[in-house]
Image: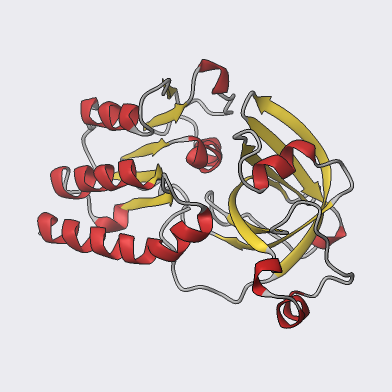
Length: 280
C-alpha cells in the first residue's frame, strides 16, 4: 500500500469464500468470488487493498440483510465491526475472483484465525479497493523491499513487469519455509529473519546494494521502524525524489491495526518533514 491520494467514498462489497490453501506454514490463501463481486475491480494498481470487516468477538453475528449504518445506530461501539487491511494478491477479472494472503500468528488477532478456520461458502464483507502504486516502467530500474506484509504487492508488481525489466527485489520472511513462488524473471533475494529484529536484514541488504545507473522507482513497505530508516536512506543519502518512491509502514511493532492507523498520519508527517529538511 502506497501513500494514499484523496479518498473516494467507500463501497461495501460482499463475497463468498471459493477455496482456501495453506501456501507456507504461516501463510493462508483465501480466494473470494460470487455475485457480490460483479461490480468490483482491482485492475489499476499492483498494491490494491481492501478493508475486511470482522466482528470484534468470535462467534458474534449481525442481522441480515447486513446494514452497517443500522448496526452503528443500534449497537454499542464495542460491538461494531472492525476493519483489517489486506493487499489484493491477485484479481481474475474473467472469473471475478479475488485472492488474499493472510499471515498467520497462531490465535493472535482477528483476520488470521478467521482465515485458518473459514470454509468455502462463507461470506466476507469488505470496503475497497484502494491503491496508489504500480511500477513505473519508464524508470531505468525498479527496487522492491518489504517483509511478509508487503509480499503480496511485491509479488503482484513483479508479475506485471515486462520481461527483462531491470529490478532488485528483497523480501524478508521468517525462514526458508516461508518463501513463495513468484511468476517473474526477476530474481528475488529472500532474506531469512530467524531471531533477528524485523527489517534488520532488509536494511543491511539495501545498504550493500550497488545502485545501478539511472532513475529508480522504488516500492518499500512493511514494519514502520525499518521503513523509516529506509526512507531516510533513499531520500537523504541516495537523493531519490519523493515522486519516485512508494514508501510507508503497513504496520508497527506493539500496535494493532486500529492503534497504528490512528497514529500513522502524525508519524508519517513528522518523519516526512524531518527527512525532507535533511534532503533539501
